Structure formats: C-alpha cells, structure tokens
Image 1 (tube, rainbow, N blue to C red):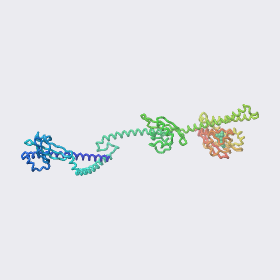
Image 2: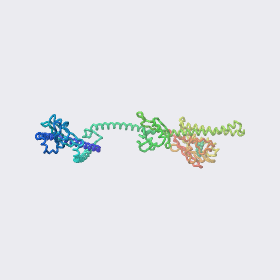
Image 3: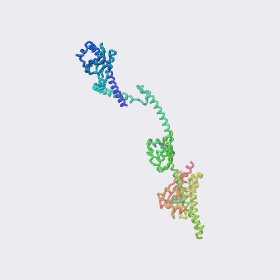
Image 4: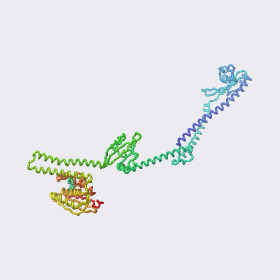
Length: 557
Ligand code: ADP
C-alpha cells in the first residue's frame, strides 16, 4: 500500500509539474505578446507620423533592427520595405491588416510560419493620403520558447522531483502508519478516521455475522462429534475432490490415524484401489458398497454422495465392522461342507454293502459281518447327526433348556459307570476322586460336557492306561479335571481341537467312532455356563483338561 501511495503521489506531482510549466508558459507568452502588440501599435503611430511629415526621407536614417516597416500605396503596391526590395514585392492589398487599415484606419493581424516556427505580428495604419504604413515584428512560438528554456526547466524539474520523492515518501508512510495500527477487533473505537466510519461499521456487521455463523458451525460440529464419537461404525466425510473433512474416532482407529487428517486426500488414509473405485462410483452420483479386509477384520464400506444445488458437494463414507458376520458365514460354509463330507463316507459304505447284499453277491457266512458293518456305519451317522443337532441347539443359545442346581460328583460317577464297558475293552482303568459339588446349570449339557471329556480320555488312551477324574470345589466355583495317560496332543493342535470336525489323527478318530464334534460341544457348553477350560498335554504322556465352573452362589447372584 505504501508503495502504491508513493507511486501515485509521484505521478501526481509529475503531472502537476508538467501542467504548471505548460500553463505558466502559455500565460506568460500571452501576457508578453499583449505588451509587444501595444508597443508595436505605438511604434506604428510614431512611424506613421514620421512618414506623413517627411515622406520616404523619414526611413533613410532609421535604425529598424527589430521591426520591419512596409509602406503600401492605396492600390496595394509596396512603396518601401525595410527588409526587401519594394519593387520585387507582391501586391499587399489582400493582406488582412492592410484591408482592415484601408477600411477602418487601423489593422492588426498575426501569422504563423510552421517551417520557421515563428509568429509575425502586424500593425497597420492608414495615413492622411490614403497610403498604409505597416510595422511587423517576429515572435518565437511557445514551443521554441520552451526549447530555449529547456535547461532551466530541466533543473527545476530535477529539484522538484527530489522534493516530490522526499515528500511522497514521508506522506505515504504517514498515511499508512496509522492504518497499520488500526484496532480491527473493535473498529468503532478507532478515533480520527471519520471517513473510515462507514467501513468500520461494515466491518462490525461482518464480524457479528461471521461470529454467529461460526457459533452455528461449532454447534453443528459438536452435535456431529457427539453423535459420531460414540459410534462403533466409522464415518469419513469427504468433499467432492475426495479431501477429508472429518472422521470419527472409530474410523481413525481402523486406519491407525493418530492426529487429524482433515484437509488431506483420502489416499493418505487408505491407498487401496478398491476404495478408490468405490469413491469413483459414488462421485458419479450413485450409492456404492463393497467389503474389504483390513488387518484381521472384515469391513463393509458404503459411500453415499451428498448433493447441494444439484451438484455433488461431497461423499459420506460409512464403515461397518462385519468381521463376526463374515466369520460366522465362513464357519457356516465350512460346517456345511464338513457335514456333507462326514455324512457322505458312511452313506457310501452303507450303500455299497447294501448293494452287494441286494444282488446276492455276499456269501451267506459273510452276511452277518456285512450287516454289522452297515449297522456300525448307521450308528456312526446317527451319533454324528445327534452331535450336529446338539451343536445347532447350542448355537441358538440353548434358551429352551432349563437351569437348575446340578451335583457334579454324582453326575460324573454315573458317566464313568456308563463308560465302564468301553474302558474295559480299551483296557483302561478309571478313577474318580473329589467331593460333592453343586453348580447351577443345564443338567444335560453338563453331562454331555463331562461325558465327552471322559470318553476322549478313554478313547485316546493306551492299553493299560489310566483315566483320573476329580471333582473339587475351588473357592466359589467347582473344578472338574479329566486326566489321562494317553497319546497326548501335539502343541500346534491344542488351539484347534475345539474347532468343529478337527481331529489330530483323522483315521484313528474315525476308527474309534469319533465325530470331531465332541470338544466343540464341550467348548459351547462351557461358554453357556461361564466356565473356563484349561488344557495341559504332553504327547506320549497324557492330557489333562480342566473345566472351572462358577459356583451355585455366583450363578444365583
Ligand atoms: P472326536 O469325536 O474325534 O473325539 P473331539 O472333538 O472330541 O472329536 O476331539 C477332537 C480331537 O482332539 C480328537 O480327534 C483327538 O485327536 C483330540 N483329542 C481329544 N481329547 C483327547 C485326549 N484326551 N487325548 C488325546 N487327544 C485328544
């Protein structure tokens, strides 16, 4: 601003200077021309008197350095001329000043010579005998006068320029200085600027408007933050150029963003091509969705364009955690595939044997064995289907099953009795230790849980091995531990044996009638009773599986 004011002042000074010089010269020129004209008139009168009295003799001794004297006859013939030979001169009757003098007694005129850049002033007077005496004088034009005065004018110009620069410098600083110290927070308190009062009033109105808008925006922002902060779903707001306007904590957590990334492009949040494609679709004006895997989770992205006055002004990106759903779906798919596979094998066996029997292709002495095999496979299928039904009921939460106090020592005793025959065949000895202990739970599930653990301890044992079951109170709760001296479970399989259809040794499990669902039922039943399962195992030495159930007091509470 200082620079601009400085420039303007300099330019004004220059223009004023130039105009002053020209006007001044013009005025002076006119003034002196007037004086010259009246002097010329006087001289003409004197010369006319001389010529009237003495005739041509009057001009003989006359020193006429500055004037030109011409005497013209009544018919326009030049009788005398102080500068040229009168005989060679043309008729002067048509000259303006001569015509005027002949008719009015006096005449005046002036003529410019562009080539000589001169001006000639003429003054003529009619004498008593009718002849005309004319005096003329040459004058420089304003331009030639200016040229002649160039040096002093240039000197004055330089002096004026220096003065103008100094003044402009001071003036511009003096103008800008108070403007820099204006109090714009409270404009109306600035004194000494009456001309700026309308501007100050405008500023105050604008400030009020901005403050109100800011408050409204802050309120909306805090409302938005309050709503979105607690949300588990991630929300990202983008403008039409995919610049992040804001995101809620859930989205920041998902993309591991510590600070704010507002103002940055969405690629600084996630570079995946899938997300770019989704935003591209939404940017085209349509709602778009996709599923994406981030880390160990699955997320559903929904992009919705936001319209303002018919144009897309932004995109709202909603991110839902669908990990559980996705995993459940995956489990269901796997489960269906496993069930089909597990059922297919015994069915094929049954159908094969049945076909042989139907076609009389079995020797009579083998018929019993074939029928037993069919019976065995059918039993396996039945127990598989029973396990599946149990599991699906557990999946549904077993809400229809009643809870009641269950005494676990007696229950375990009964289970071991049922397993006596099996243990005998496997040449395994079973021992039960502990005390009576009650829990609050679903009797059938608790029975199945302990049965499966004991059954496994017998099945995966070695000849001459032992199964020790203990039922003990532990603090408020009860611990049922089933320990065996069997084949043990390798380290890397310990986590997985609770998965559906997972078996360490598939062929051995099938051989001994395992379905691969026993421990899944144990896990589910334990979860429904808020129980914890602990597994210790050493391959070749044995396994201990303990289930810690909350006591009856806890459950009632
Ligand atoms: P299955 O019907 O095959 O016994 P489970 O779900 O009960 O299915 O057990 C899963 C797998 O865990 C079994 O196939 C077996 O390999 C292993 N397993 C379970 N209990 C024991 C145990 N006490 N000792 C060794 N391995 C065991």
